[in-house]
Amino acid sequence: MIQQFATLAGGLGLFLLGMLMLSDGLKLAAGPTLERVLSNATRTRVNALLTGAMTTVVLQSSSVVTVAVLGFVNAGLLTLGSAIWVVFGANVGTTTTGWIVALAGLKFNIVTTALPLVAVGVAMRLSGRQTKVGACGEAIAGFGILFYGIVLMQNSFIDIAHLWTVPDGTGFVVTVLQALFGVLMTVVMQSSSASTVIAIAAAQAGMIDVTGAAAVVIGANIGTTITAVLAAIGSTPNAKRTATAHVLFNLVTATVGFTLLPWLVPLIISAVEDMGFDDGAAASLALFNTTLKSLGVLVMWPLADRMALMLQGHFEPTVSETGRPQFLDRTTLPVPTLAANALAREIQRMLTMSWRSLGDSLTPDDGGVKRNGDLSSLLHASEVFVDEMSRGTMDKETSDRLAQLLRVRRYLENTQESVHEAIGLPLDAFTSSSVAQVYATYRERFEVLVTDQVGHPERSPRDDLLASIEEAYQSLKASLLHAGAIGEWRIGHMEVALRRISLQRRALQQLVKADHWLRIAL
Image (tube, rainbow, N blue to C red; front, side):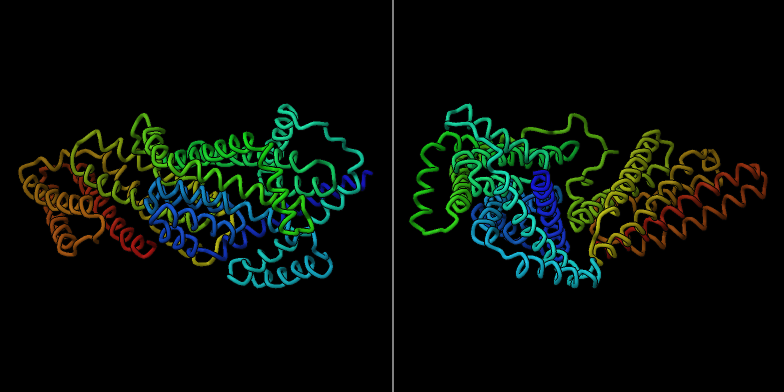
């Protein structure tokens, strides 16, 4: 009997591994396509619903789609209203796992079907994971491993069925316990699909009736919200709102399921019998899950707009913190293209802050010290984010883009260091009569450029402004050297003043380079 339990555990492990490989492979193979599909097909709630469902059917992971939606909302590519319907659609689309098991999964011949898929997938994977072929190979191998695990679990359940006695009756307490079992399994395995497959296999083995298995499925739908809740902790307000919509949808769906369970299950069993399915229990549970999620959509249809309006009024930050990332949402990390988009938008924001910081270095303003400190905090946060990105696997296009973004980040880091040092140097030398007017011209031209870049970040720094600043810099440098030569200022003081404008000039050069490379990366 130990052998049967070991096989059951191994089958579950293979199923989860297969799901992970399938999801990761399709995620890498899809690349930017996922972004284009979700951002272009959500003009109406029907489009958004179908897009979420079909994308989940293709990727076989509602978590990937939900994470993608969070990233698009944060990037401004999706409104909260559209995102909610994509998430609802993803919840419906994820029920296809049960249908795959019902229609094919429990009938596969391992030798002739599942294992050859693994062999073909691994052969394709050897071409390299970052290639499209390699990513597709990983997905195919994951598909085979997934079904291998399903069959192992089914066989193990059949062997140990006589050891498990399900509580008699279908009362409220028993149903709640069965649902809690589904919640617990999903929380532990972080996969509602795995819990659904286990419920189907247990029902097929006669360990639990269809009504009890349906209660387990309801519990799995509740438990799957834990993943979104955990992902939203510490994330942006929009991510929290979307995650809350996901939780509310599944709670409403579970309530509908519990209410209709005594009547819905017999109707579904009867319908499945009329359709002539061989595996009645599996097909009944698959149809129950799809029906339940569809009923949830119908219930939420008239409520969604009010829910979106309610969510907009929640999760607002209590204090506006400039030094806190606005786009570096950890929920985007599982999808490399989304994580790169988030990083690009945060770096774009840091570039604007860097221009402001450079402007701060022209005047004795204590506020410049704080703003430069905020920029330092963001640079550190982006470093941590990139470290987490690098632990995952990404396609070549995304890795090349990340390299460009890291180049831009390095230019901004150099700017921050130069401005930080410049702000700490005195401005006394620029107040002398022989230098004041030249410095005023220098500062005025700098401020024109900074104002232009902050107000119009969509355009590159103007060549005429850059040339005029360089001219003013050379004039100011000559004036400072002259002041030192005639003894108006000590050589040490003159060197400090020269150091300050040299740092500002270097910071400007770094920002021009950062702007150039960021436009390429975007």
